[in-house]
Length: 159
Image (tube, rainbow, N blue to C red; front, side):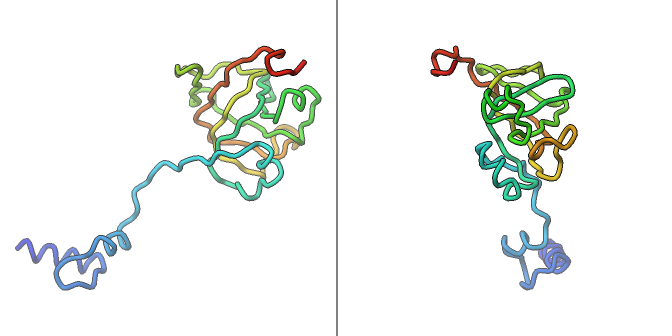
């Protein structure tokens, strides 16, 4: 009885052995399990210059975040942000109810991260350009933000 069930299942799944299927054949006919897509770590400069290479991919990118009502964007540095270089920034499209923030090993709900260096993980698209079409692309489906430690300006040699 057991052999008949295995044989019937093998035939139904499209296997061509007379008694059982190999693991490779089961993999061919059964759908692959859904696994979380591991994000690529990408520099913001590569993202800005080679955006089409990362289209619709999950990525992690580090930058300086401006987080104000109506404008959430990631810039390469604070200087770019303060000069208003929108074309050198990525629009951040996030849902505060979903996003988790990691800071100093602790996880918390989303809170304002204006003027902070962060690592953002989400799905990139160069087809959306944010508010008024000013940005180089956007990050969507954001599920996490890591806040980088704050440094004093004189520690970095920046004034």
